[in-house]
Image (cartoon, rainbow, N blue to C red):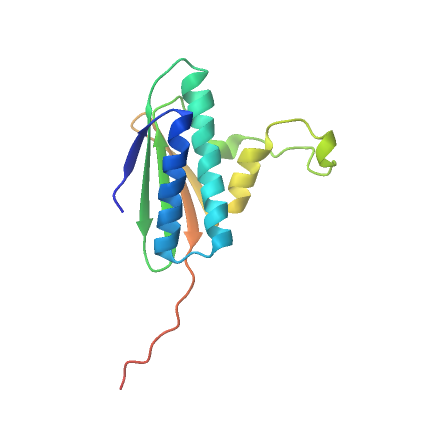
Amino acid sequence: MDPVVVPGVLDSLSAIGRYVLGAASAAGLDKRSAYRLRLAVDEIATNAVIHGYQEAGLEGTLTVRAEMDEGALTIILEDTAARFDPRQVPVPETLDLPLDERPIGGLGVYLTLQGVDDFRYERVDDRNRNIFVMRRPRTPDVDRSG
């Protein structure tokens, strides 16, 4: 799939979501896996827009691209905001509390990292590169021996 480049604004999140769901469908992911992937990408993209661009008084873009091989679908999300490695966000200490007693915030990044099969972060050429990997379902081998 061709990459998509969108402005770093909240209105762009729906286009990113459609792209991710289209890639998930093309990869044959089940609905649950596709939803988890879209949710993970949406969380990191939202953080980039709000914290990386809006709160910092910056403008920028988000680039999303999908790579697929027989084993996995990989979504790569890049932004030009300040360095932010989601893996460095501490695990919320209130996970054992009832929902109505937990403070707001801090759970999205944790759920992102838990919701995908693999997550990696790189800083490349002044860009944050967030890499989300979902394993593709195995297809049965077809006997072609005749």
